[in-house]
Amino acid sequence: MDLGKPSSLDINLTSNYYRDMKTTDAISLISKIREKVNRFIVAEMSKHGVEGIGTSHGDIFYALYKRSRLTMADIAKQINKDKSTVTALVDKLVRLGYVSKERDSEDTRVVYAALTEKGKALQPIFESISNEMLDVFYGNITDQEKEDLFNILRKIHNNF
Image (cartoon, rainbow, N blue to C red; front, side):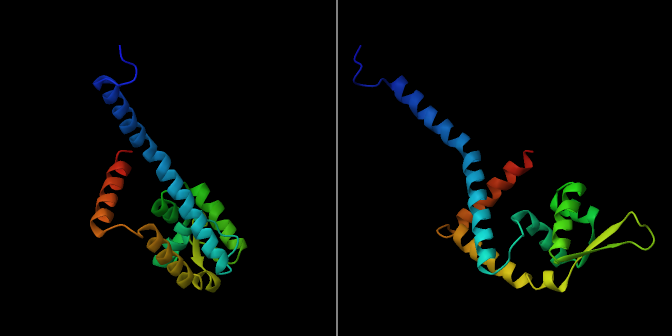
């Protein structure tokens, strides 16, 4: 047996290994991209003097930019997080002065969240950071590749 030259079986097994390794590495790569995007956003917020807010607060701001007053349950549903998580995130935004909370006058179990003027003032900053992030994210990606990527990611998301 010649050990110096790989057989077609060896080549096939090796190519299958690398193919499989690459497909399983996709999850790791998605996670690494998410980490890089989050670091980018936090760094950009810091450049704009926005401190104390994490990327986990972004969905709450976005929801409240679309509708000025929402219940905690509505926010939780819109951003796909449980109500206790949303309450903790909103409470931090209240402490930082970006959001106010108010109980419903008819049903005191219902709590509304709304942006303060300080919170509303962040919208142009967040839009600018979002645009910069998207420019970096899609830097060398064609329109067709963007569409393909979105379709693939949506399919993966729908698998769960």
